[in-house]
Image (cartoon, rainbow, N blue to C red):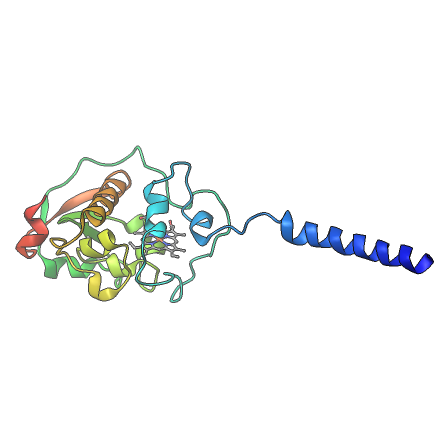
Length: 195
Ligand code: HEM
């Protein structure tokens, strides 16, 4: 009788433990919900992580912190954007602004528009996560959500409709956060056609 009672108690304890650890455990958050999270389901914050990726994580070569917060990690829009400048840049000139020389500004071009991202040197500077976008027009990679160096080119002519939307979302994102300092004047024709 005592043994049966003991066994019953043991069984109850096991069941309680099982229910606690397996059944009512909070669902594991996906990586997508941990980073770039935002209140809007399809914000660019999430999109660039939710969509197919050609490279797992942009962190290896740098010191980007891996966040586990559900707060958005992308910077909010700014209200102090300067009036756009229209200075001409050749592809060759643009290369000087890739973050290699710390005395020079850092520029990122999207659809031939050149943005000054210097204040985010910790993101676009030499050796940082998104340095592959610096000193060039890498529209194709932004549209594809790709961090592959070979995708970091200006030609976005063969992007799908969805990728075009992503590219245009990035363009809007940059427009609301970085000053336009000019435009690239000698990109291959496809890269400029839909401006
Ligand atoms: C698991 C994959 C990824 C993680 C964990 C991640 C994480 C992050 C984080 C934490 C930031 C904020 C950085 C900061 O403000 O300093 C950021 C920004 C950014 N991410 Fe990602 N990202 C991922 C994938 C990608 C991919 C595939 C792309 C390709 C287009 C991309 C493009 C960008 C860009 C352009 C920014 C900078 C936005 C700005 O100028 O403020 N990310 N990412």
